[in-house]
Length: 151
Image (cartoon, rainbow, N blue to C red; front, side):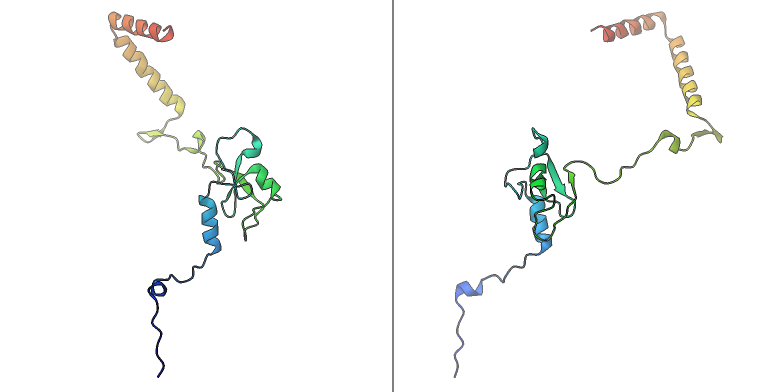
């Protein structure tokens, strides 16, 4: 009869082997704030252009610009090897730009009005408001404007 060996308490709770993927390495490098080349902290505010933080476009690892160049102009992370980077904090995606001429012309009662018509209406409303002001109100407005101009 063969007796089964009873596992020790340590063997019962032992974890299975961990499998580390390239994605795990990439995430760890993105979370790290130290340069993989020199091991020093990569900071956003630096004194010289050599220490400007750059980010690998493929895996997102932070480097000093000088360290990136020292590594042959490519990422030093195992399995990445990308030769493209961008300066940390600069937006690499295209920005949406809208010009005033891209907007539809405003309409009032079905009639299209341009910006000049709107400006004329606003100026006319301002003129009417000033005309309604009493002499005393005009004096106080003038006095307050003088105080703002000459503190």
